[in-house]
Image 1 (cartoon, rainbow, N blue to C red):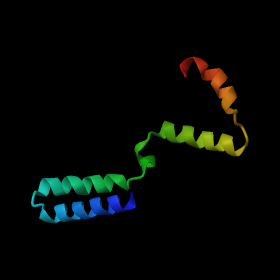
Image 2 (cartoon, rainbow, N blue to C red):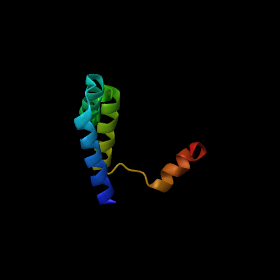
Image 3 (cartoon, rainbow, N blue to C red):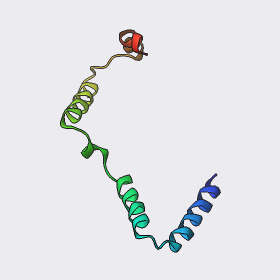
Length: 77
């Protein structure tokens, strides 16, 4: 499996060296830049607050078991 990925990477590198289309090169750069972007900056303040509250609740032991959650949300599962 690892050898296959290495071969694909080499093929991509070889292909990239032949590219002259500036717009395609820019799209590839944009894709790379978006891959390293932190998702935290893309979510709303309400989502951030909700996540922080959930982490705080978990840290203080305010958790429900999986079976309890299934009972509450059974009709939607």
